Every structure is written in C-alpha cells, then in structure tokens.
Image 1 (cartoon, rainbow, N blue to C red):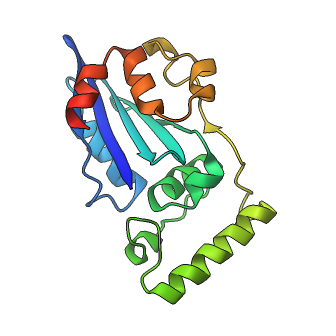
Image 2: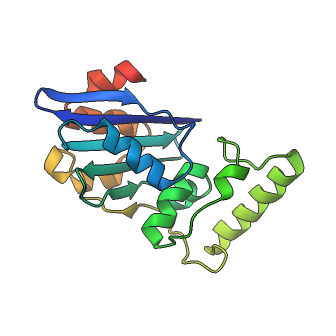
Image 3: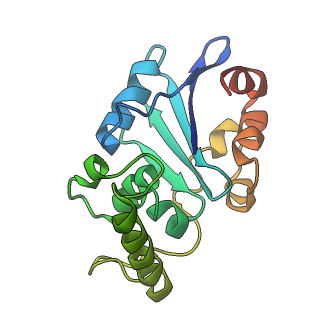
Length: 182
C-alpha cells in the first residue's frame, strides 16, 4: 500500500494535495504531476511511502532538475514506484515498461509469476546484484540535503523511519495540511 502527497509552497505556507498514482507510469509522469501542483514555479515536494518499508522525497523547483532521496534503496527497488526512483538515482535511464506488467502492490500478474518474481528479486537483493546493473545499496540513496533549506536537515532525513512523512511535514510546518489529505 502506498501513500503519496504533494506539498506545494505558497506565499501563505504549504498546500497539500493527494497524489493520485493510478496514472503514473514513469518518473517523468511523477515529475509532471509535481510541476503541475506548483504555485508560481515555487518548490513542490512529492512524498511517497510504501507502508514502513521505505519513503521517497522528490523536490521540484520550477524548471530545475528534480532532486531525489530514497530512505531504503533495496526495499524501494522491489516496488513499482520505488524502482523508478532507484533506477534514476543509479543512472539506469532505460524506460521501464515493467509498470505495465505490475500490479500497484508490486506483484506480477498471475500468482505463480508473482511468487517466481518475488523469489528472484530476493535472490538478487541478497547478492546485491540487479541484472548486470549497478548494485542497489541497502540503505539511503540520493541527495539527503534536498530539504536542508526548508528545515529538514540531511542528518534528520537520514535517520527517519516509521512515520517519516509526518516528521518531514512537521519540520516543514505542513503537518495540518498533510494530515488533511491522509
């Protein structure tokens, strides 16, 4: 189960909106969704988490290149949306057509295929290998300083777990607006 929200900075503080992931098939779609929530090209922070396994932060500032952080890359890489982030962060820029074949809970269509895929992913994770690509680290990945200027230090971001999105929102001063969309 995923939770995703967009926090858009405005002159009056933060505005939150529920991020509908049903139409997101690529990282580009996710970035476009974040940019569309921006007020006057100001900062938008996209927050995404899969239960307590991992969380991700995407920061979009106008037309600048987005910045990314994932709390647990190896866990994120085993989920459909998390793998979009880890592939970007590791420099694997191939288009990912696998989302068409995945259910949003991260399993393949068909029970036997899901079991086989899960077992293969576990084996790859245990070996630290991903189909010839750069190994996915078992920990944080990305730019931990992406929220430093907004009140969430890189040290704080690196140590968050559990209800990380609420703690991020609290540091940003956006607790009430985030809880309103939860």
